[in-house]
Length: 337
Image (tube, rainbow, N blue to C red; front, side, top):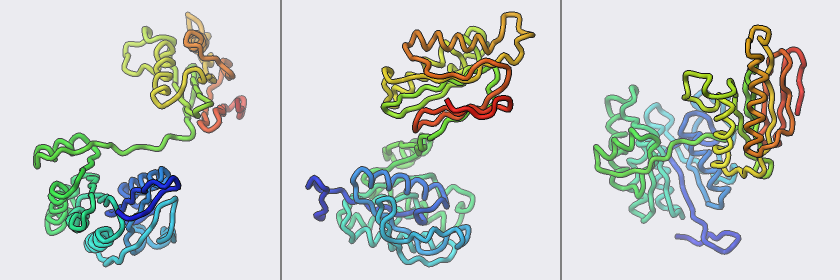
């Protein structure tokens, strides 16, 4: 299709997305998914166009972003005429967006939500490949359980089954529903989350915050260690609570995310002797610190900085951008290590 090429001379896949209200917007879950997916695909080199509804933010015009056309985060934005009447806005915008996509220079048309899929036959008539992401069984929601709205959404569901080259669902329940009701196999891709830039844990007393950082790949991890070893607890459900299991488990999880153990270093905070005078075997905080250091030593992970011991609680913030650890306490104020 078409002749768009990348800087390397290779054809660029062109994708149209529709079914959302508008982006940029936080009006609903679909809008967040479309924006997050679209800009990431644009960053990878795909030519992505999103068809927005005309009109104002559902919370009022004061929440409008003012961005309605042109480029946004690498995404082409186009606005289609919309009948701004309750129940008609989604219908009219999806019809016109599907028409534009059908006759536009796209390789793939990606429909979001069941209702808009009722128009999927349009781009299929012009030879486009179509994908449907089913964000939920919308016809079953209380506001659509009866009347024309429910019937139209159900029609969209059936059109997705018939016309979509691929159907994406977000949960196993919906995957099983499509298999049971239509014999249609789907791809389950749950919604993702953005990796947090900062990891925070509050009110560290005798517990130890273990902060691991791979500076080469900028991958960070944190464990809130409560006890030196799992044998001291009746419950073994959460390995991250124990020094003997949590540190190694955290390193393995970081490696799954792309970290390299050779570049991982550690910073520690906490391990206060909050009730040491009443503890027959000594301060649990001190024992936590010693256990963590012993485990990290065995794993060949060096401790580059620490703020441990004393007799006060701490709140810590670990920055995944640079590996800095901010320690806050009522007694010692704020320290960055």
